[in-house]
Amino acid sequence: MNQKPSNVFAAASYFVLLTGISAYIIGLWNADMMLNEKGYYFTILMYGLFSAISLQKSVRDQLDGIPVSSMYYGLAWFSTIVSLVLLTVGLWNADLFLSEKGFYGMSFLLSLFAAITVQKNTRDSLANETSAKHNVDGY
Image 1 (cartoon, helix red, strand yellow):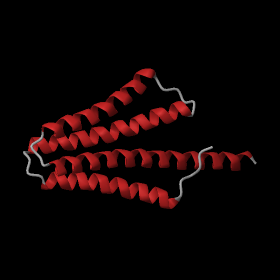
Image 2 (tube, one colour):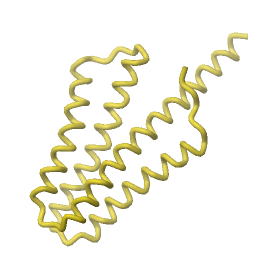
Image 3 (tube, rainbow, N blue to C red):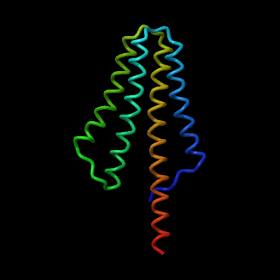
Image 4 (cartoon, rainbow, N blue to C red):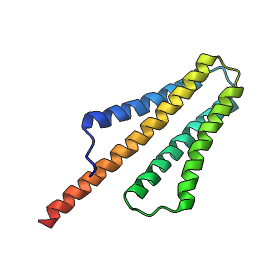
């Protein structure tokens, strides 16, 4: 049985998500890069967030017995791995200080982890509300 996450944990998850995304974007804004490089890193962030949430949903659906096609499940894994590889290759070849490369890598991973946590919290909250409503309707 999934418990509803506490309000503090849910708020902390949103705070961490906003912190990771904000740090990444502010870093891009202040970076001495060409606009196409900034666009590349921004696109990787958005792609990574989408793919991580999609992967978490696919895994959770399978655990809950909701059918997920193997094609979609595989694509979710592939997309998540590709976003990590694209960021790694981009940072490896970038003309940045190691501290900047580490900053982008850590804020990217922080954002992905927080997005997964926020999605999990949302799903747990909805599942808890739905089961509570069914229990009330059943009496």
